[in-house]
Length: 116
Image 1 (cartoon, rainbow, N blue to C red):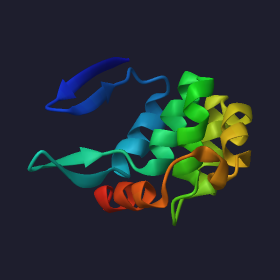
Image 2: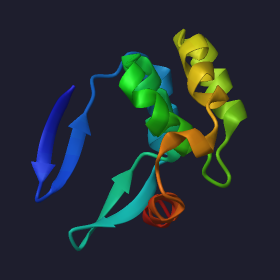
Image 3: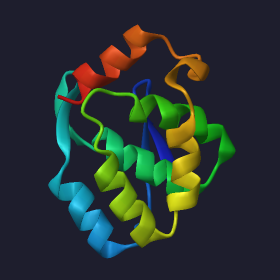
Image 4: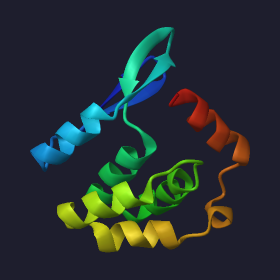
């Protein structure tokens, strides 16, 4: 993974581990305004899966927050999580209570708005 800063916004570039998954994630991409530019962004489920691919315990609270977003597609995450071999790690994040994650509800709303 390579992280670059676009202004004050960190942008991660990740090498694909499964070409079919990358194609599926790209087909689902949303749009967001970043520094006055309309850019393509991964949807919450795909951010969740990429974090699960990294298998970092520090990402579990963020993954739990993503899974608490309205409309989060757990079936999509389970299907790809199983195919990518990361389902057991992903389940750890899904099992966390959204209340245990120390992220304010207004932040979740801001993330949802940005991903529309």
